[in-house]
Image 1: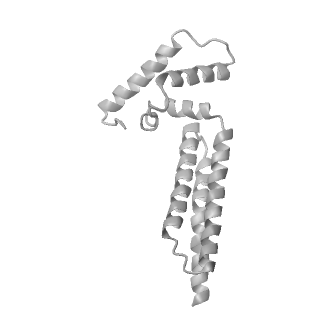
Image 2: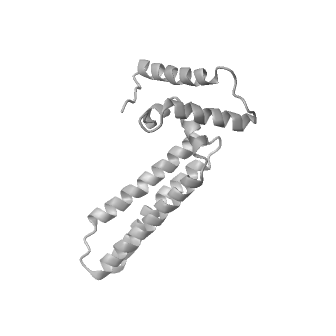
Image 3: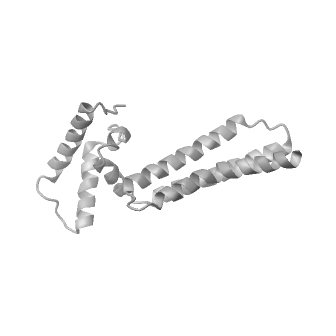
Length: 167
């Protein structure tokens, strides 16, 4: 009976650790994957592991030294995963992901907080990305106005469809 319990416990622990990674790996390897989808997937993965870590920390009832050691081991495992995700994000081309999210009108409204990143900052990122991708020193005339119109048009369209995602 104890052996079955330990096997069940080990299986659940492994499932809890690896299932989010397996799902993320499967989704990220799909054909025609876009940058905004990858970013949202990484964000979901980070949130999942952060929630699991908080759950482990709040529900741990260390009745014995062995339980305490297992909980500490689990904490360090989840902390290592979170640290790895943060490290990858810090090395990523964040402007690329911001551009991808901005250009997807169904996503960006709910994710961008104007107190954190202004329209001017987004315009600057898009200008830099345009110049980088098209290997030019100048953006087309009216580029800034087109970005602002895109944003405003997305706001109007989403409000019209009842999809306003205001804070």
